[in-house]
Amino acid sequence: MVTPQAEPELREIDKPTPGPGQVLLKVTAAGACHSDDFVMSMPADAFPYPLPMTLGHEGAGVVEELGPGVDTIDVGTSVVVYGPWGCGVCWFCSQGLENYCSRAQDLGIFPPGLGTAGAMAEYMIVDDPRHLVPIGDLDPVETVSLTDAGLTPYHAIKASLPKLHGGATAVVIGAGGLGHVAIQMLAHLTSARIIALDVTEEKLAFAKEVGAHEAVLSNDDAVANVRKITGTGGAAAVFDFVGYQPTIDIAMGVVGTLGDVSIVGLGDGKAAARVGYWAQPHEVSVRAPYWGSRSELIEVLDLARDGVLDVAVERFSLDDGTEAYRRLAANELRGRAVVVP
Ligand code: NAD
Ligand code: ZN
Ligand code: ZN
Image (cartoon, rainbow, N blue to C red; front, side):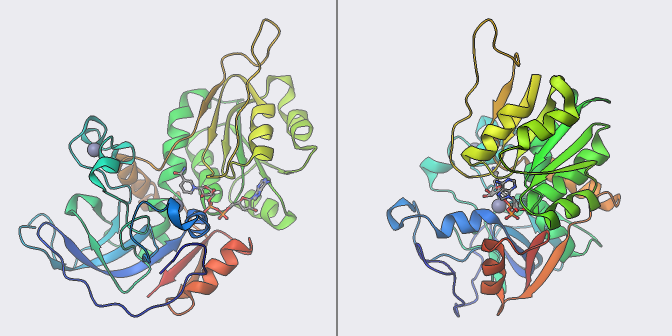
């Protein structure tokens, strides 16, 4: 539960009842994302929705009860929740890209944990059964973070796949919850050389454990040190899971001609590109992707079923949920904190 600019706190609330078209889940796992930290630090007047609010936009559960009119999923099914809820009918939603719904804001539709009650609870309401993806025998605790820490990097990486041929270099900045899954995806989906950047030796070692070929400290020398590895050609794709000016500058400093820079971290800054006759690299694309599509979540879960993804999970009870957020803010986690109610 969160109120503006305050620590999260544990509160007793009533078990919710699913309304028409809704589904009640008994939560099996809820992931803590760095974006929760961002939400908690927002000023009170910046929230477009009522507070306090239950956090948790990475959710897994077992279908407990169906609201009137729901007949496309069975009670007892183990599922994860596709988080970026949209209207379901606009052009973007029609392609499964509910993360880019053009009407959500006008209609006041918010993701669970980011505007409506989320998964950091014993029960949660899901607005529509189409937001549920059955996971079969997959362990919900190890799978839940794929709904964001898996889906978000997958969406970003997929857009750059044509650039990541053999001999190309991919750079991952920030080997945390999202970054450590991104490294595994790049290692499986491409033959590119992967360079990871982070701020501590522990995180660099972790990045190598999950598949990075090289690990470089993210400091003032980072551009030069990455360029020693890539040569003057630079990187074909850079994924920035921090998104503040120093890392955006590193991303723009190491990308090569025809390269992609995807700024995923919800920090603050501007990506400055040089232009003009002598300006190199040429034809760089800069994107700030948000989450991913419904079909991409299904693809990510298929990768998990194939044994390709191994999310590093630190488990917490619901009572210890606030401790999970403290450790996340202090950058003490290895991978993802998952609350198991
Ligand atoms: P995390 O805290 O688990 O990981 C962040 C990692 O970045 C840590 O390993 C940390 O050591 C590292 N880091 C911090 N400063 C760094 C620097 N200067 N250089 C290199 N590495 C640095 O966070 P997370 O949950 O993985 O989220 C990462 C970011 O992505 C957050 O900003 C979050 O809000 C954002 N996010 C965006 C989307 C989206 O759709 N765009 C979705 C989910 C999360
Ligand atoms: Zn998130
Ligand atoms: Zn829509």
